[in-house]
Amino acid sequence: MITEYLLAATIAVTGVTLPPADAVAGVAPPLADAVAGVAPPPADVAAGVAPPPAESVSRWAQRNARPLATVDPRASLTDLRHLRPAIGDAAIVGLGEATHGAAEITTLKHRVLRLLVEDLGYRTVAWEEDWSLGLLINDYLRTGAGDLPGLVSQMSTAWRSREVTDVLRWIRAWNATHRDDDDVTFTGVEAYGTRPLIYQRVESYVASRAPARLDEARAHLRPLTPKDDNMQEHVRWYWLDVTDKALYLRHARELHELVAAVPHAPGDRTHELHLHHARQIAGFYEQFADPNPYAYRDAHAAKNLRWTQQFTGGRVAYWAASGHTLDGPQLRLTQPPYPVLEIANVGSFIRDWYGTGYRSLGFTVDRGAVVADGQVVTMPPAAPDWLEAPMAEVRADQFTLDLRAGAPPLVRRWLTGPTRTRGLPAAGAESYLAGGSPGQWFDVLVHRQVVTPVT
Image (cartoon, rainbow, N blue to C red; front, side, top):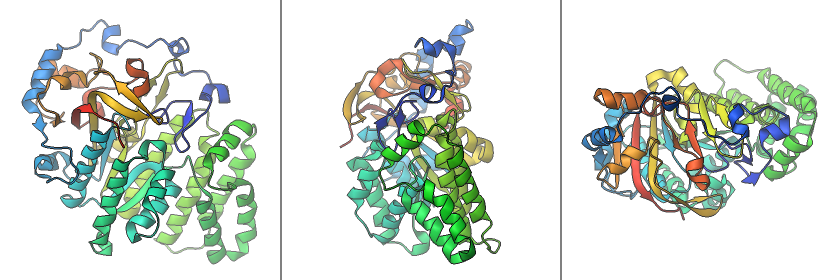
């Protein structure tokens, strides 16, 4: 997670720092101690319960860890195939990274994505990226038309790297050498940067299917459509400058109702796709009118992820920050001096809807350096009470650890007890995620001891 992930000061699509949500919307901080920038103690400490000895968890991790031979995304997948039973027949697999901007985490995720596609038949990659840009990326991956570096340069700042470009280039190579019905598709699950492209597609759909209502649709679209693809300015204008957002919300919601009413046959996929376009328009205006736009963001992204799985009917790999993918119905991000943010995240909704049909894989790291907000940031070793700390004692550069494996009582206490994990890397140990246990958050860890910055 970089600053754009949940922090109430940033919008992911633009990388532009904006005021905290409480300053914009007049909302009280969700936790009182956050005002003073005081980090709440772990729940077990507050309750006077001693955490299990770290060495017992480390010994268990050492016995159960499965070392991985390499981080090279082009290498054989033999060392990863033990993950197939852990993934099972999951409809959605979350590939969550503890921090953006780490080269080895990105390449390990690339390797696991290859396993999902090549061995397990996953054919959709849902990404922590905007829906409208996702359509353009998907067009490139399916047809080869377009400029891949140019598309990557338009992605959220977290993804602008050679390593992410290599992931997309691999998907394109797969599609170029397989039948159309075996293509891997790409979709963005966010609505924070809905571009004019979507508004134009909705207008064209109404013009072709319900021309008598085109003027009505245009009356809604006119005040809503961004002037251009500079979503930084459109977000800034709507979120910060527009004090009365009711007019825009009414236009967006009535546009969605209009598209829903366009005549269509049951099961009409063209209609469902364009109705989903209209949902993204409404989602944009609702997110930045919501008292907690960060909670709205994850709830909306979860609905998009579920819609994607149901629309495609296949198995989906969800590539995002761990703060989105883990199962965290009461997830808290601490980042002094900002208020603590508490949300129900994407993974918690997906787990509620899919149960064991959702697998949460957490790609964790002990220490190293990453690119955060365009700068190289050095990360110290994991704090002693973070879930990553026992992993540092495992004698392997990178490994997997199935958290559902049998464990002795002390380790079970660790698996089910409160924990923390790395937050925003630029803030070091002052920033962390809390509000859950290792075994709740993740089914499997893919851990790397030392990381270097993406290119």
